[in-house]
Image 1: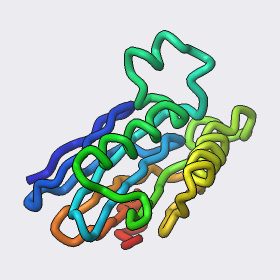
Image 2 (image 1 turned 60 degrees about the vertical axis):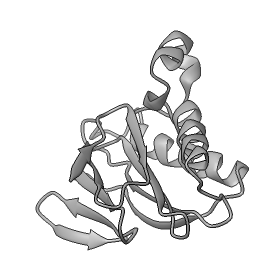
Image 3 (image 1 turned 30 degrees about the horizontal axis):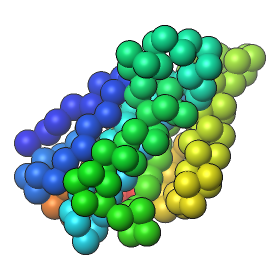
Length: 159
């Protein structure tokens, strides 16, 4: 059964029959967390790096921002039994889709934000598909922890 993670949203689960999936990763970043021992996983699809640009919105919808969404994802996975020492984190997205001039650099800023937050948490990224100019779809298969990314016009890649 597929559970769709929308833009600016997150989901966590221990349900073995589930695949978490998110679409339309342009400049947004998809983050998967998976603990292979506890069989707990989660996915975040965040849009922007820092909540300080709109603190009220961050309170209402923390998953929109890296700095509020990623800690929330980790905390919720831990509530289901995940251990930070065992988790595997994979990321995808961060493309420059609508900003051809690279003026705003949202994709790059999002990627820097996720790396910084994970580094502060003592967590390394174990797989990534970042940058470029194409949209991506990302999925986490709960029975195996396998993460795959489908790149527009470029096939599927396992992370």
